[in-house]
Length: 181
Image (cartoon, rainbow, N blue to C red):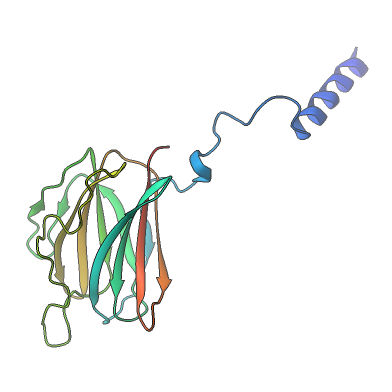
């Protein structure tokens, strides 16, 4: 009996290893996304200011991009109950079922305190009408060399953040939020 059981288990293991025992596991990642929804942090600061914020739609995620004049900006991106203005603590109202606090470790002003990023509407930095995940992108404020944005999203979904060098001497902080789990 032990020999038959061992042979059966060995055959099942071989079939599973060859992919003959069925389709992909139920936990297969959507679009290959394995990011999760926990906080993302890169703790490098820069005095190179923020110059622009933009967004884009992709097949599997929506993307927010923060342009900086130089390199070295870090970030803190986390789901929160409320996004708050730096310094005052006032709540930044956001549309959507979940809120991301996006803090770029760079100022939105130059060494003389002059704004380097002047959006026409602080509550709606980019038009996200028709996006699958994004509901609103707002500027919370820039204080003590850090700039905070509020990103209203449909629900708490997988997200990632990273920095891309360029163009030129600048760099970009990128935040992607998946369309689903």
